[in-house]
Length: 376
Ligand code: KG4
Ligand code: ZN
Image 1: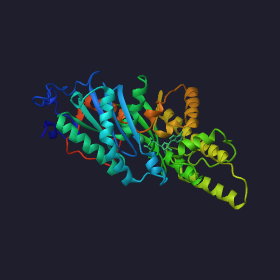
Image 2: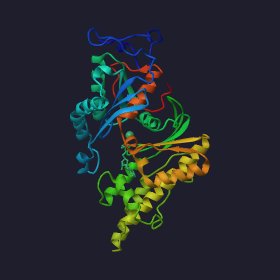
Image 3: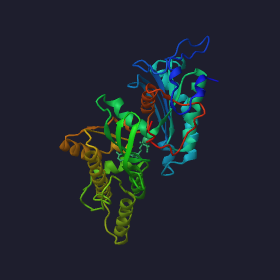
Image 4: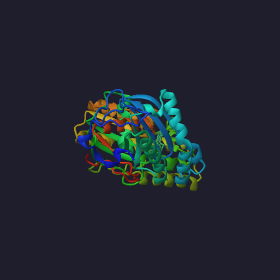
């Protein structure tokens, strides 16, 4: 087996930092560890949830390809992600996605310097598909395998989009699975300042949308309808907004929406889905903007990095843009294809780890609860 089986999670052995990995007859040189410059080619693989993605990123910054195969339609009829279906769909989609990513980048497997795949957090069956394929490829090609934390990956979506989006910064990762405010002091140096104590923001959007009979995923639908409604029509509670700390709660808000609609139905009153969507979205935005600005103030942040699927929300974008500009803070929001789950951010994060000499042994396995703050 390959030499890098000797290393466990952590810094690579400095004595071997100039090691050149070779496969006789097929490969002559490989990038020595520690020399992850503008030319290094890293294949990223992301299969933590319901997007199968493969991407090639050069030098941790330049996206040569970013193939994303969405499973939304498969899960739509169930109104949410079915883990078993997700894992099977990854099995079918991943190898073609990798082939397509290499094709679009005009590269072959043998050009790659390393493989980065999401190690967690996520659905275990889905993670396993990506990690197993990544490790197999790394073993055959005799190049490093680097397991990436999905949340840390999201942070790098900002850096791929804008070179001014650097650490230190406050990050808000807001998606269907996570809602988290993170003090990012440097690469691999993170402190979680707060997050949801129950539903993630995207989960609340999806659950409210489902209750209102809208299609899955419901976030974009609510956002669309919000633009047609009155955000002040219903005064939904902004729970925890005035409490100390940076945690949020969206479960009570979701229940308030449900109770409100049931009350209207029982009274036979007319229901404006647009007004309900707009009022719900306004409550989420008020809460999240307030907590984000409080956290930014707490750590004296000069930058806010917004990422994750809910970063697409028009209300959140404009609410945060207004608040940040008032506070003299620069706000960064990546384009949509980098906000949602994608492998480019995994490749970029993996490259940043390799630059610090971090990669994994081939017995590293996925961890559905992988913590972000690991103090590397
Ligand atoms: O990051 P992502 O693609 O997957 C993970 O959850 O990791 O995020 C998907 C989430 C879903 O909950 C979806 O409803 C939400 O992002 N979302 C939105 C919008 N677009 C996507 N939520 C609110 N407004 C949007 N425009
Ligand atoms: Zn995500």
